[in-house]
Image (cartoon, rainbow, N blue to C red; front, side):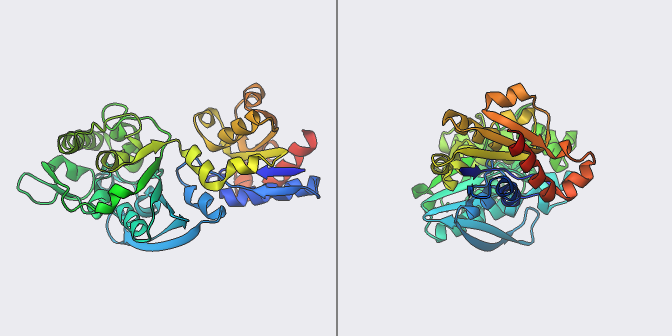
Length: 369
C-alpha cells in the first residue's frame, strides 16, 4: 500500500512537517509494510516556506529590515530558478507587539529586501506567501526597498508604513529595479478582499494588527490615496479582489510588475509535486489544527482531499478538532475522520502532546476506516 501523507500545520502545536511525521508513525503501526510518502502542504500563508523546504528547496538566509526597523534574520528558499518567500519572515506580525502605533508604522521594506536577494540569486520566478503580515502599507515598503520613491508634496520621501501613505503625492519609479520586469511573481493569496473600503485591507485586517477604529480609518484613507497614485502613475486599477490581502501588499506589485494573484494551495501543490505523489497513492491522509467551516474556503487539507477524491483515492482526515459533520467531509472523499479531542478531553493536553495524540488518532482512524 502506498500512502500519501499531506497535512497542513496544527497551529500552535505542530508544523506541517511534524504533523506528517506523527501521522506516518501511526500509518506504519497499522500497515508496517506501507510505502509512505510525506508531502507537507500549506495554503499559501505561513507554512509555505516549510513546505517548499520539505520538497527539497535550498534554504537561504538574509538579514533584512524588520517591520518597525532594526534587523531580523529571515529565511527564504530557492528551488531551481524559483524563489520562495514568506513575507511574514521579514514583515510579519510575529515580529512586533500589536499596537495602534505599530499598525500605522509597520512596513514591508524587509520583504522587498528578500525579493532583491532572490533577484541577486538569479531567480526567474518568485513565489510570495503573504499571510501573517504586520503592515498595512500596500506593498509600498517592499517596492521602496526595490528602488521606488514615494514622495510627499514637498518632494521628500514619505515615512514608512501605512500612515506614511497619507502624505503621498507622487511616485518616482525611475529607480525601480529593472530586473522585476523579467521575473514572474506569483502571489499566493486566497482572500478576495479589495484594497479599500469596508471590506478592504484596513477595515477587515488591521484590527488584528493593533489598529483601533481611528487608525483603521486613517489607513483606509491612506490606501485610497495609494491606489489613486498607482492608477495615475501606471494606469492600473489595483482596487480589485485579492488586492487587500496582507495589508494590501499585492496592490503595488500588481501595478509595477507582472505579478499575478493565485490560489495559495495551487501554488504550493505545484511546488511540492503533490499531483505526482497523488498519482502513486492508494490512500491519502491529510489534516490541520481545526477542520471547520473555514476549511471549505481554499484551506489546504480539504483541497488535498478534493484532488484525491477526483482521482478516486480514499481520504482519512485528522485534526485537533473537527466541527464539520461527516456528510460534509464525505463530499470531499473523506472516509474516516478523527480529532485529537475525540481521544483526550483536555484541549491543553491535546496541544501540549499533539504529536503523540496525532499518532494515536491516525491509528484509530485507520483501524476504523
